[in-house]
Image (tube, rainbow, N blue to C red):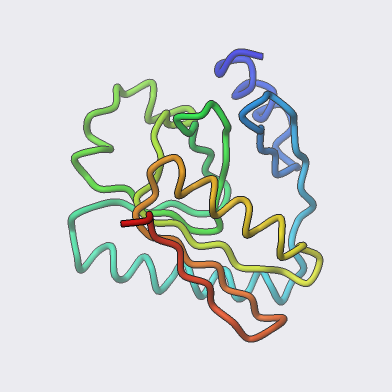
Length: 150
């Protein structure tokens, strides 16, 4: 599928959370449970307050897809993009899945998530240009911080 075809496919299947790997494999994710949804809501609220106060970028929720440089289309539980990067996109690119890698991402592990899969996703984000990533693992009461190697 082209990027436009994948976007249309996702729009026709709005009840699902869908991602695509760099090789084109479709990944359908189940909705989160209520407790995780509530935690994610709090996380988005806190990020939203910081985004408004900081003013140097814009925030996105878990339903936002980004086309990474490797061709994968991914969505984090929360993401932030520098304003100059966002403003470099055309209006059409902003409306569909933006062909950029966020600068900051957060993944909140739900009870059904495999830790290894989320760790691999975070490494993929870093490999594609994320400057900072947080993986919050409430199951094990740990936070993993991801940054590019110096």
